[in-house]
Each structure stands twice: as structure tokens, then as C-alpha cells.
Length: 206
Ligand SMILES: C[S@@+](CC[C@H](N)C(=O)[O-])C[C@H]1O[C@@H](n2cnc3c(N)ncnc32)[C@H](O)[C@@H]1O
Image (cartoon, rainbow, N blue to C red; front, side, top):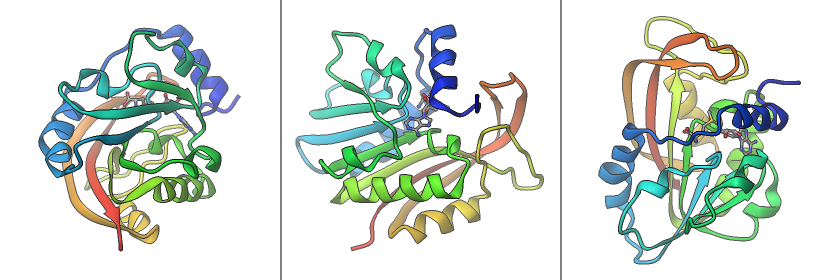
């Protein structure tokens, strides 16, 4: 079984059913993303959210929120949630061709796409589903400044490579900040890797 596959993540969530959220992502949304959203009633899409979207913790937001994951864990989210959890593959265009979103939010899901062909499909889907003024916001692991790290079944690009990739899909970067040397534990083998973290906001080049 490939260790970034749907089957792998199904088993991972069976073994790790507890849900948690990252404070750094919460602050990213509240301080940097939310002030840039101007519509009163928002359509939001959370990518690779597992069974617990960050947006469970965001208060006073008038929004329709869909949280997708290709793992079946998306079907076992809390039934009282206002968030619509859906079992959907980021690489499948069907869903992305149907609806437009004012915000598409990624927290480390794109790091799971290790083939360039997969990343092309994902970015095409994201572009297609963004509304004209919509924002793509993402937090991803990137290579540290002075060394090269690798993690099995994760794509860890350099800041420059990631910037070029995003621009190549017709997106304009309006926010790009790097925080240095965060420790990440790989879900697959438990090995700790020290890499940098980037937070990005981009919109369609009109
Ligand atoms: C590293 S986890 C991040 C989970 C959560 N967003 C967070 O920040 O804690 C990556 C998530 O992306 C999901 N995922 C990976 N590839 C996917 C794909 N092609 N389509 C949809 N979800 C995917 C996995 O099932 C997993 O829940």
C-alpha cells in the first residue's frame, strides 16, 4: 500500500480517531485570511480536512463550509456540525466543476501529492473552483533554507519552487511568509524532520 494513499489514510484515522486543530492555522485564518474576505455570505472549501475541519473553531463566520477528504473518515465527522464533510478526492474534477468558492483552504494536503501529474490536477481543480475574487490559502512544509530534507510520501518543495508552481497555474501570490525550522513528525514512520513552513494566500490572475 502506498503510504500517501486513500487506504493508508483510512487506516491512519482508524488508529488515530482523536481530532485536533493547529493554533498557528487558526491565527493565520483570523489575522491574515479573514480580513481579506469581503463577501457577507461565504462559500468555503477546506481541503484534506480529515474528520475535523479548522473551521469548527472559527466563530461568527457567515459561511457555507464544505470539508473534503478522500479518506472515508470524512463520513464519520460529528453529526451536529454545520460543516458539510464529504469523501472526495482532490484529484477528481467532478466536484470542482460544480461550485465556486470564495476561499479554498489547504493545510498540508498538497504536501501529500508527490507526483507532478497529481499536483497539476489538484491546482487545475483549485483554479476552476475559485470564484473570480476568491482566495486560495495554504500552509505547507517547505525545504529549510540551508539544508535539504525528505520525508517519505511527502512533497517538500523549496520556497522558490513552490512560488513558481503556484504562479504557473495562473494564480497571483498576495501573501507569502516563511517561519523557520518547525519540527514535523511523519504520520508514516514517526520520524521527526526539521523543515520550514510557508503560509500563502493567492488569487486568480484576472
Ligand atoms: C497531513 S494530513 C492534514 C490534515 C489536516 N488538514 C491538518 O492540517 O491537520 C493530509 C490530509 O489530506 C488527505 N488527502 C491526501 N491526499 C488527498 C487527496 N488526493 N484528496 C483528498 N484528500 C487527500 C489525507 O487523507 C489527510 O487527511
